Image (cartoon, rainbow, N blue to C red; front, side, top):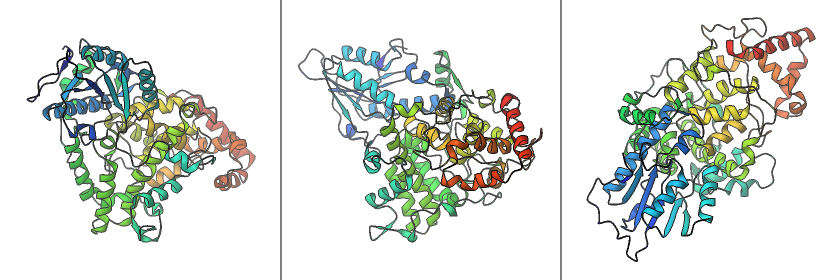
Length: 530
């Protein structure tokens, strides 16, 4: 298949490359699929849009098959929609004979092909792409311009301006500022509805099996041909492709349908069970909107506005709506601010000096620990796990076991369909692995088996005993939990949020501490066999 313009509709005649008219080339990245961007308000025959399926982006980390399929399928649909609206589009598929498989090398070719006099792009959300395009434009012989993606509530450096030189950047402070600035869930334009900003304590219930989980109404797509093209091109991946029964949205229209289905059927119960985990349901009452949001099919404002409207109409309780909005207006915007303020040094943080490789079962889900088998198995099957599965099961184990933060980061970045570095890296290195030493989180988010048992049904029928700290059948989380605080005492002992942990640890008899250490060291020496 040769490099070509996609011509699906009746288009204006192509510009004469020999004329004096100035041709502009506009780049659209795979996570910039926003049909409402101001770029597209008018058609202009002198503007050529380009989208590229390139090995540069499939290969910089090993990606889940569904992530590659989902982004490529959405890019192709987006290109077809632009073409149908009268825009000129030059689309490079993964197997195009003219595809150089490099962003900048392809741009060089297109600039020459169309005799381009001006190059434009929307600001990337990943630091590596931002640097690549910025450096590229500095060396261009033609003019260039970067545009805002017109997506986020906040600007890149808004969080840095708020926190300044503070050692700890508390999300709650940022979240409240955003609520007031954008008039979300407020009374009299300044006070929080319900008298408090955060209802997190009301959103920690376990799910007993009722109420019933909403029916999954997402469309089904057959991307078998696309998947074959990806494989034939030699792209490596992992996880279940499920290309013939693909459920992730293809475009904005499908994303909006998914949003409405969540508001109607999921949001009313979301608050109660947002932290719950169960082997009986992989999605429970979660929206699954993060892929559509992070590829910009949806705008966060419309999602927040729909959720707030549901509360004001009496359709969903305040605790559920506030919890959902906090994830978008608070956490999502906040981690982006951390990312842009701290990169590129942030990616190298390793506060505890952890360096163990990931066990092979991170790629198979084959472990006797029910909780990890469920959370990792779900991630491999669906390219999705919700925040507690990511933080308090997989991330919890990775931190307790001393797995290398960079390896953990690369696994998270690859496995989840919604994972782009700007949102994934601070969540993984900061919140999950405490690798930044407390810039983002006020304490390491670790627990023994007790928390996992309280929030899930994972411990039932497990090979390991959730209550035992020592012995061959003791849950690895228990010994690893105490061993983590023992070996990192010098760095954590003065954290006021951990004072209770160390008071409890100091009550242990010396013989018990020794037994815990022996069990933990046995576990760490043979992670592959857990």
